[in-house]
Image (cartoon, rainbow, N blue to C red; front, side, top):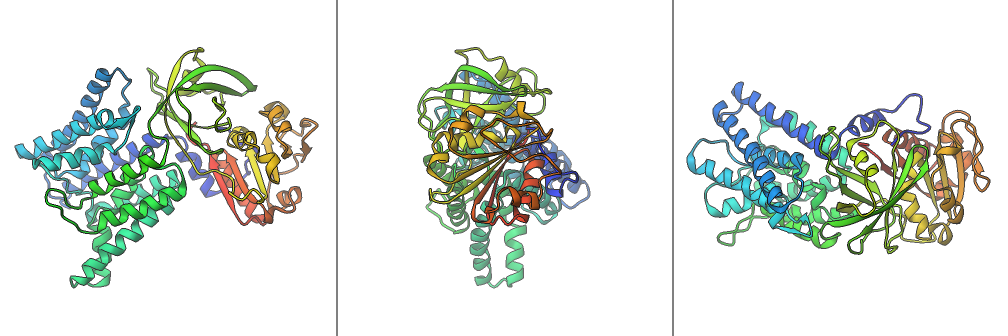
Amino acid sequence: MSAVDTPRAVSPAGRLDTLLGKYTMYRLILLVLAALAAYSLLLNALGWLTFGIPQMLVHLVLCLGLTYVSNRALAALFQVRPHSESSLITGLLLYFLFWPSLMPLDVAGVALACILASASKYALAWRGRHIFNPAAAGAFVAGLTGLNIATWWAATPAMLWLLVPGILVVVYRTRKFLMAAVFLVVATSIVTSELMQAGTSPGGALWQALAQRPLLFFVGFMLTEPLTLPPRRWQQLALAGVVGVVFAVPYNFGFIANSPELALLVGNLLAFFLGQRGGLRLTFTGSRPLTPSTTEFAFEPSRPVRFEPGQYMELDLPHAKSDGKGRRRVFSLTSAPGSGTVKFGVRTAEPLSAAKKVLLALQPGDQVSATAVGGDFVLPSDPRAPVLLIAAGIGITPFLAHLASGAGRERDVVLLLLARNAEEIAYATELEASGARVIARLADGSAPPSFMSDAGAEGRLDGESLARLVPDIAGRAVYVSGSPASVASIRQAARQAGARRVRVDSFSGY
């Protein structure tokens, strides 16, 4: 999404958000894992790892090759378009889970895990959505056969130099710091306590827990996988605590004992029952231009969609020629829950991604898949709590569902809309009917529609100017939506103006 009214000097957080926003979540994780794989080969060449280069290369080729080929074969069997990035991510995860070896039984175990991981996406699925993390499912079932057991060898001190920065990048991009912290506190506390009871010093116990157990790799690349998480933040935090206990507490029930992969599968199953279970088929019913640079797309879902106003939906938009931005894209839902129609407002100005070209080429009756519903950009549960909604450009979209659900009539709502000019104000008719007080700040100084208060366009939006526009901002819950750079700037301005609580919803990767 385009930035509107961004600062002259972008903050470090804004620059980082803009940089990471160039990559989809799948592409970013793939790049980080690929860098870690290359780093592991370098460590082995330097003598810091002792697997042997031939073993590591064969292991890497086996994991990547088998997951890629088996995924494409199964996709052809089930007559669906394969998601190649997902299969490569699964292959790299299995590379770090199993010990590199040339022993025939070990190789057979890894090969079985790769095939089972791909098969789990189709066999262990509900309405087109896989229930379990594929790598964990493949590793767990392969372990039951006795051919090979996952060792999670990425949990070695030499890997930490790149592993920790890589995990921080991924967790920052997914905004899952708190979830990761909950898991790490719970699991690390249990593991450290057990080691101390065995006679290890507190410092040594903590070091072993973080450097020699797969807690960091697990939370960075496995636990926070978007497709196997519940939709709400409180659910994710509760899940992190439960998985932390199952991960760290030792148990043995004969052929099943505690392992990271089993802990994750338990968490995946719990998450499945908390969210929108299964994928959806959306039938395209039509589109309409919102502004010269934005378009609304409407779909009829194959079954009722469970979501809260402010949440998003992930669409699977296959295209023949990839542009590096991936085929799964996230869009805020603009329709009200229970309306029977699913709508999205999308920026469609050039340059267009391949996924957006797919959207624009849809004809009535065409179908696309929705793979997940999630997000926590919801208004306070208390309808008496006043709110300030700040939308930069097409960042208005998550607020449309709030207003369509009656938020503007049921509570005290102020909407501050930032746009380039009057022509770029989307959903003007809906905003006028919403009951919210709307303030427009147009960059070119043009006049907004008559029902909106004109905030002018002098200077950039900072704390002082925001406080003049909304004098009671300190008493309002503030919600900010827009491009990463816009969100970073507006969040800073809101805090300077006295806002005590600011929630953000950045549009990245478009």
